Length: 128
Image (cartoon, rainbow, N blue to C red; front, side, top):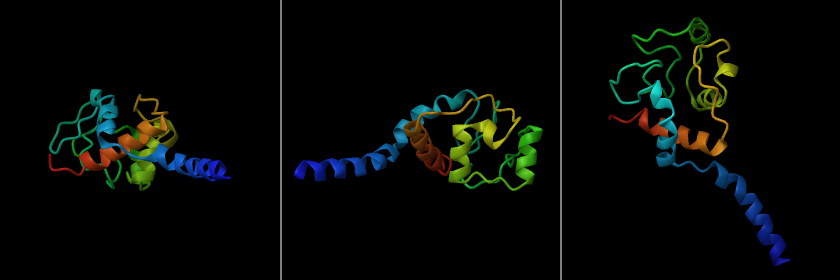
């Protein structure tokens, strides 16, 4: 009986454990993004726009960055980079912005996505 209760408790805990976010791990995941993006305040745009302030920012809003037509269309339709939309985009960019120019295929590992989201939330709002 105790084993069954303990096993049930562990199983109930397992999904939460998989979703725990680690900012430091997310920073390591972001290293994949650095080839195209910066995230520091006042940072330059690269192949992709600077991501500082991305959290809750309207899509296509970085001054001086030339967005693709599909991204401009999604921006005109009201796309905002909130947690739900960022997570969807990180998972599968082409599902959020079909025909968009981002060449990244998406991050399939759920834990890495959660960690990256934690890092983006912190780093994109920091006054670094």
